[in-house]
Length: 141
Image (cartoon, rainbow, N blue to C red):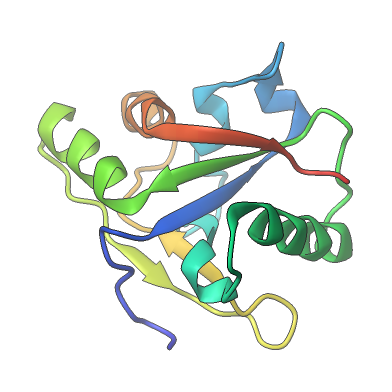
């Protein structure tokens, strides 16, 4: 449901452009807001209603292929919401608690969500978020 807080037990995925990936490693640049963005776009994996991670990834790859020009080096970063929020809260100078909110785009991207309270051009928060990445997958099939 739009506006629903995503539980800390759940997971989100972030599309990381090839320019933010070097030797398969995702850089903090993948988690920096661009001008005009209100939040970091992610997808809520549990909202995909898939039985396993491989099916979830295939679903995301299909969504990305419809919406984006997916580069060969692009990756999908998987984060546990609770680990992400705790890492940023405990290690950021202002003890920032990031809300992760469901922001479905119907009908094209119903699992779409956002990580809010990420300041524009804040490398510290971006570094703390990238530290919470626990899985990486190709963004293109």
